[in-house]
Figure 1 (cartoon, rainbow, N blue to C red):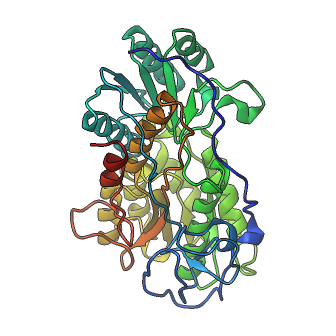
Figure 2 (tube, rainbow, N blue to C red):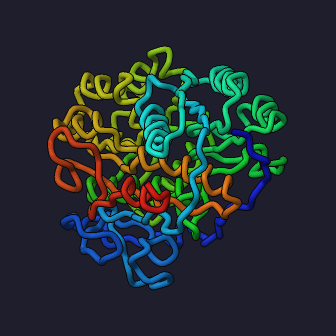
Figure 3 (cartoon, rainbow, N blue to C red):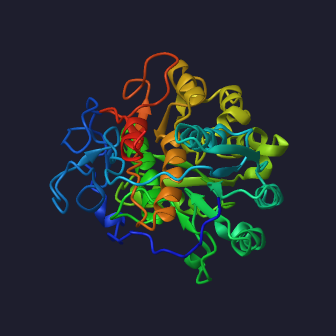
Length: 402
């Protein structure tokens, strides 16, 4: 099935999220119990109030402080959309070796199966050549829609243009189009999480929540090993949010930094590089890791073998089940800013459906909450679920008529 493509404008409005919009209570206050999204709490680990709060909270209410454990939580679309038949979906995983890539890819494939579409997952192998090859394989396979997981348009403009020329719909799932750099958009559309929050602000918030948790854990005395990840746009955005979150903490400071990236993960250099940075910075007591999958690629073992695991507060991001097990066991990771990557994949299919039906792309509502051993931790063996839980798969199937 072939569709006429266009370049729709996404429904994303800027809300001006910045350090000024992030409200903290006293740095040394104890953490409170987890509470439903959108309600107030006494926890010191705070996330954006006013402009970027849960849909349940009143927009613009500056008194509504949200804790890191509440985070921000949305809801899936409620507007129905038609589901065409005989559609083939080609899912480009950023790298199947990383759960942070394979999980949303599988989510998209599962959603496609629910609506009766044929789907294939291609392993992008954590590098631009792999992503380009996968897109071109989708074109060669005459797919109707190609969904690219977590990678910005700038990494493979040529292949995206080839797909566009072939009349194939392309969806950036958790990705940015080329117009963010002043160029022409090449994706047919990209997923969005909240109507009042840009992609940059969403990732800023993740870094801010990391900062809030670290401030609480160190009683306002963060001595940060600053981990920089610059392979993708979201890495610097998260890092900017982390720094913004630490600005108002007078005793908090960055004492060392290290650059880590996809190539380090692929070559096994993550742990050696982090271990070397720790040796050179004996005062470090806090680390914020931008990708949870890195713990499984050696960081967990590296932190444990450093002999300093007990004195380090370590928080990751994304919230994979394997990482929740590390957190529960206290094995090199203490917390994560979790969101449902499966939901992210389902939102990619919904975005494709909206474009096929000539509808506006609907915000997915994918939010985030901090999980540590005492807060928001699911039962043993269970994947992360929001508190309160959001049944996004049933919600999507309802609007899809399935």
